[in-house]
Image 1 (cartoon, helix red, strand yellow):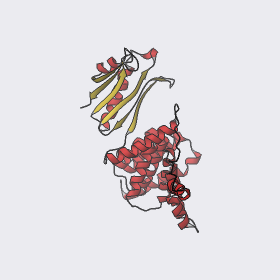
Image 2 (cartoon, rainbow, N blue to C red; image 1 turned 180 degrees about the horizontal axis):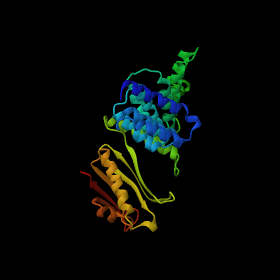
Image 3 (cartoon, one colour; image 1 turned 90 degrees about the vertical axis):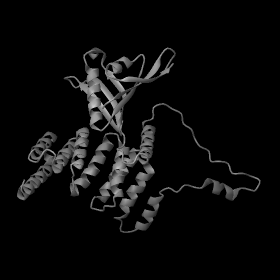
Image 4 (cartoon, helix red, strand yellow; image 1 turned 30 degrees about the vertical axis):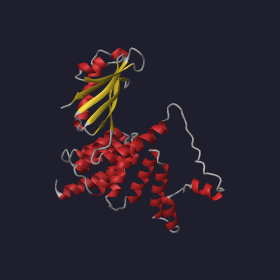
Length: 326
């Protein structure tokens, strides 16, 4: 494409987005895909625009894939900066705020300053809040805001560093104790309960941060799911799992009772394994109780690693299995 052709293409892209508010999502998707088809298949700018269109139409899973392809293809300039922010936002909406935090913090660590600094900070604050790190979220937002205040910039920056200073309870107690008394540790609360999604998110975020530090250069763990839907869009079979480094794991597999024996389970495994292999995984691990489907996995090439007998009850066992993908 000539320079004039590229400039014309950019103008037409801008025209599509300028009219987005008055057009249906499907029209935007079609218009952007038509424009992208004019560029080579792995053109980073075209991939970015396609990702943005799916992001706009709330097709977050497809948007994530295209954003990553655009970045791998060498996206540069303003589009690259936007892609990082928009991918982070997509990850947050997909329920993976820890990955969004890692992505934005890595970008900020490069030291690059541009007109999108405030936007990066805003989306980082949102991701931190969703990850259960509310105080860090507040500090991030205040620091970004301080750059735009006509007064009190220094005070806001200082408060951003420690928005709610903690009281040194030992020191406070010592100031009022007589020599014959000893300080008593501050009381703490222990809460025992059932399902707690907020706690799950916080623990996941904290462990993700620890794991990222312990495994530099390794992409953080990502969820991987497979669904089989009928003509009405109802779930017939599904599988959920994860990938991390060279390992993949299957957490749950289910096939509707009316559809069992029809090959849906085997299809779930094939699709999951192919996707895991594409992410660089060399093996898959999973577990299945003896009253579930360990034989199903064995028929698919999984081999037993070990059994935990008596789990969850006498006479049953938890079977751990593995399959090599190479």
